[in-house]
Image 1 (tube, helix red, strand yellow):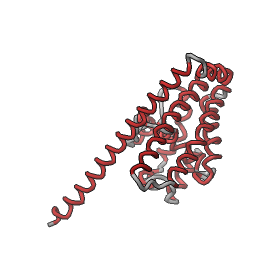
Image 2 (spheres, one colour):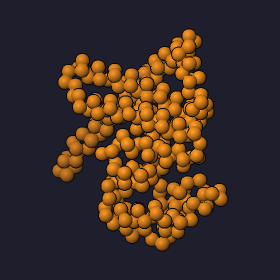
Image 3 (cartoon, helix red, strand yellow):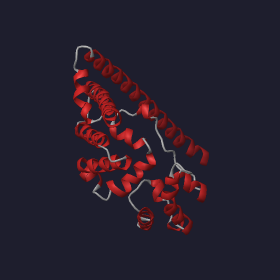
Length: 250
């Protein structure tokens, strides 16, 4: 009921979400949609449906968006990974927690509230809370690094090369941190952190850690190439459309 009320209110206010959601008209929030919101929780607990998207699409005939819009193996930072992991749930969190708490203006604080909520949403366990807080802890240097990278405008080829190499190294560290947080939260728990650190820093563990970081570094560079290739394709398509447009009118 709260979700329906928020969505209806923001539809009337032409709210702050992406262009797809701004296009939703207030007349879409009919009584059938209200019943969808109201009946979802008990039906989910009973087991016949897996997600609200599937439920709403079956009742209302709505074409639901892709829940994994980007391959998780092509995400080299925490923000991109969590935006594309269970994207519909991410949008729900943005709507009802992140934006009401102040959005990007209080980003460093809001991620702690959001991930703590996500941990409790999964289950009330110390393992999951430690996963949430480790993830938030790893978010801090990423946010600072992004701000510094955006402020620094590389004007030479050498500068661009240095920024790219630092970004690849940061991506390798971020992927490692993400794996560590998930390992602590879903396998070994907070009591296993000291054991994990000691294993990584042991004589046998250091080569493994170095190999992981090198592998993730190379993987991040490959993701950069994939991103650049997609951007080049998009730019080429837009240029061709502009070139064809005037000639088609003639």
